[in-house]
Length: 356
Figure 1: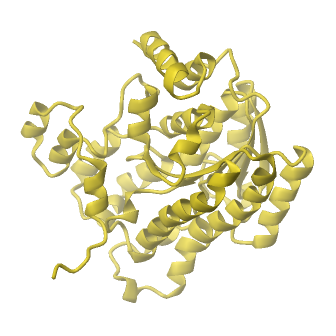
Figure 2 (figure 1 turned 30 degrees about the horizontal axis):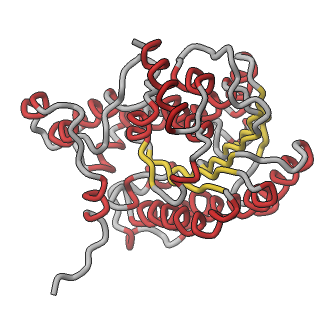
């Protein structure tokens, strides 16, 4: 099945998407790729020590890219894996990764990060993945509270690194990409940008990232630099499992524990998100997607890659997944998995105009 997917993807992408078969094989194959489609590419993944950032860094590193991975020093990080763990694992698998300890809430450290890349890589940066987020602890500590019950500094804890830093990194990355007339900026976001999720600052931050991607794309398109928002589905991160076991996710989402456990079980791995990023990076016509919100599950259908265990995770727009989510499990089993809710419906379910 895996080989047939790689072959089909190779034929399809070479005809329509500008990716060659070597790139496709690396993106689709879960084994370590013998061919390095991203050789000589320079990538920066912010917040890459664990979770989604780690998955992206691992996949791009194995594909041959020189990956700069940022995170906090070990003495400031209480969780595993650490930044050094991630970089060492990439290196052990034949990749090239550089750990850069960076506090993304401090502008000067961010500027030094880009100075280092410019100096070491001859002003080259092919891909920026804005993934850094330092608000998880604050989200957990304020679970169940209304926005007015939280200290106003809660906004900064959520959005200083998640949103403001993404803007700063995009500014500095664009200054390297525009002169070369080539580049890709991927902002990791989520459906919280269109529907209430967790709390007010979190949702506002995600909506702003999506708007930022669209407006930056407008200004950068003439320079052949693409900017997209990438929405993973439910991801099997270390944080997700911690919050599941502690009951925090149930408190945050107001959903039964069993339902959340099922969502995570049917969800995607960080490496699945990494394959979506790899396919975008390998796509010579990615500029056609600039300014858009992209779902990892939709990219899976387009580029035909799979997850670590050989399966396709649940799809946010799947009718059967939606039925299962709302408790109609029997009906969900009767609906074909390929039946999708139109993306336009997601857009229309967002902000509302008053009906006169």
